[in-house]
Amino acid sequence: MSRQYDLAIAQHLRAIELDPNYFIPHWLLSLTYAEKGQLDQAIAAGEKASELSGRISAALGFLGRWYAMAGRTSEARQLLGELEARRLVTYVPPFALSAVYRGLERWTRLRMDDKGIEERDPVNVCALKSEPAYDPLRSHPTYQALLRKMNLEP
Image (cartoon, rainbow, N blue to C red):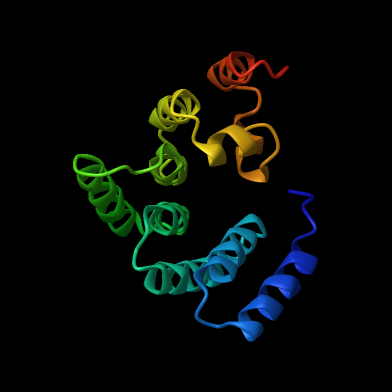
């Protein structure tokens, strides 16, 4: 959140050294690489996180986002379809779908963020105000309405 990406990458790599089979450092590494615009590295780390996590929705959502941002839209849409199908039979946090929508640049993602707020999805609730990935949306009226809905000033 502090946008100190090089420091974050070093810490994530250190955590991976300590336990290479724990998916969270790989997932966080993918987020950090993506924020730096290093999509090939973000995808590699995201694929590893998805594999190690047993394909949890959170990991798949962000991997779908990286695919879309890298122009691999068919792979992104495939993961989006998987998440939407999964949502019919089990809980899928709205932020996972929102991540893919964000990569595909669909404003539908803002509706998913709104759903995340209604469901008290902690990722949406915690990240909406400060996560760097939301920077491009901060001036959008729908985004500002979401902040007001959470009693946060836009």
